[in-house]
Image 1: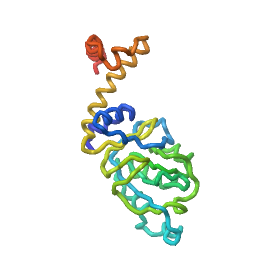
Image 2 (image 1 turned 90 degrees about the vertical axis):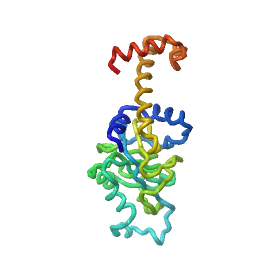
Image 3 (image 1 turned 90 degrees about the horizontal axis):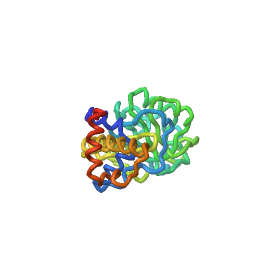
Image 4 (image 1 turned 60 degrees about the horizontal axis):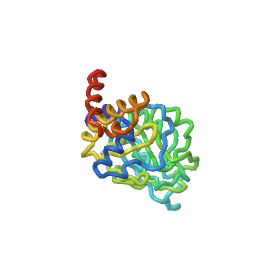
Length: 236
């Protein structure tokens, strides 16, 4: 992805991005029911690389399948590009883990930007201590093989009711994860930066005791003049 766009997205919130996307008619880009295991980390930003699970069929999904170097889950962990976000479609089912601490550690060491599942992670206390952003629905100790069968790599998926296409730009913060269609990522990043500057101005004024009427949104013409002066004074 564009390095300048990545840098811009590192400094904006998923809330602001959701508003920018909503202005373009996109209402379902926030992945539902996923939470950060390590909310103190910087924003997660990167293009999506996907793995899809289907319901496991017992005769095809014994623990021995992991001995196959071409197993989709194992292969995906070893081929997810550095800087990408590994996004897993676990059918919103956290009864069995999508992955565990060892696989997430391997993704971290390979330079992957983050990992997201609409299911659960096992070894979640250990994952929470890693320096890679990780988002899931809730902890889950059973191996994924008990319920999930890895079936497809880097294809369009659904994650938490959000469509995710390979290469879409995925952004995560302490609140959650939003998916930006790749074709509009640069424009959304630019708009989100400008929105953030204005929202910082508004927050400052509200904390000074100002009413939001005429300020947010800036329907009072004087607000726009005041914002321009504030921007100049702050160098923003």
